[in-house]
Amino acid sequence: MRPLAERLRYAENYCVLAKHQLENGKQEQALLSLRQALQLVPRHVAALASMVRLCYSRGELEQAQSYLQRWLAADGRDSECHFLYGNLCLGLQQYEQGLEHYQQARELGDDSPDLCFNQGLAHYLLGDLSGAERLFRQTLEADPGFARALDGLGCVARSRGRPEAATALFRQAVAADPTFLETLDHLVQVLIELGRLDKAQEALREALERQPGTARVWYLLGLVHCHQQSYGQAIRALEQAAKLAPQDEVVLCQLAAALRQAGQLDRALQAADRALATCRENPEARLERARVLAQCGRPQEALEELGRARELAPGNEEIAAALESVRRLLREG
Image (tube, rainbow, N blue to C red; front, side, top):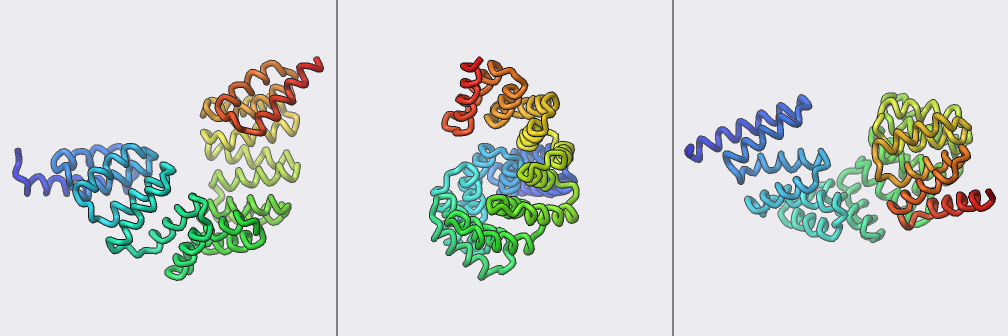
């Protein structure tokens, strides 16, 4: 075996190589480089940290957790390790455990706005609106332009039944960071709830001027047009979203719904089939396909599709209502 100093040097070189590979979008090659580093030095903290971030960004949460556990064993007093472990726990819906890791990170010296915000987010996800609001406000005291904290306060206001206050906060968040699409999504949803469809459309048009190639913005615009019953415009917007994100089953489901409401049933069925091909375990896609089948005069097939949808989402009220509607059609002959 090579001397430790030599193995450390090679491991560092592999970490540098992985960094350059990631900068050039070569994730698979970066994974190989980091694995090489960890073969040489299994407790190499920089390689473990890079592997955690890479696995997390790829949605490989179990792999990320495995490397985090190795990182903790190598250096349990690294605040960044606890911060990232907290993020992972939120992704796994383990909110209490996430808070424990965030508290560890704070005790180890992390006083960043990001940590404060994430602690607030964990409280929000646990239903503790007062705790969430306090931490979001602390985040803004440290960084007044922290868009996610403004968005968090908007979500708290919305959860408390204060849509006007939520709208104002979401607008502030969009102004602070126009590229943060989650806030735009929240703003549009609350404007739809308030019936201010023109204002929602205006916000989305402004977003499209900044980010014309963003599928989510086109999707939201299509959704607003559906609420306005402007199905031709909705279909055009949703088709653009589907071009930009051809594997997004949410976009394809909404496109199917718009086509169905416009009476274009053959195309609606094609869009629903595309959504199911993308994710066969999506109950919303099966529900929309059933609606199209029922409108096509094929209630028995619709009933079978709804049965599959109910297996995937037993408590879904929309599926239950659609089942009753189709059964009524079948009884009436």
